[in-house]
Image: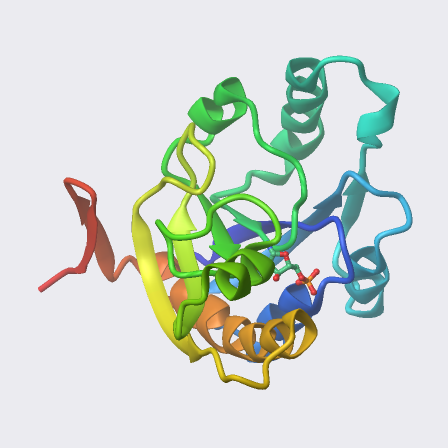
Length: 200
Ligand code: GRF
């Protein structure tokens, strides 16, 4: 079976990228790491593993749409089957999402639909929930609204600070993102309505 050609989009340190590399998923090939930040440490991680990289600095663009159009041009030659957002801190324009419809997934540090957007751990602490967690979901044209592939729970303890909670969340992310990528790339799931369910 052909391997799923994956592009990982990352703007930050790329610990999720590292977890995906280390998981050595045999149904995928990480064909590209893309970043909107020339100094993202994720790019160095890619270099260390001889994974091709591409960078487009969003600051050079006035309009999100133009930036995203150029991303499409840059990644086209890589024949990407699945885009994995791993700490990619840009909202994708509807045109981009349509161009890769059903082929983009994201990881979010909360149990969606609770606490979408940024600073989710802080939002969870301020709200006072006893459990938060991690969600891997397909990306649609909304912010953190796509169909949910996997979720995992993290307990909020009384002693937790935003930092300690984020640390626990990250640990769980590094476990479930590779698992979700394995599920999606091996064709084991299908979308029925809003639900992502295992095929029989
Ligand atoms: C993760 O917490 C992810 O959920 C969020 O951004 C963070 C990226 O961390 N979308 P890293 O760059 O993978 O270390």
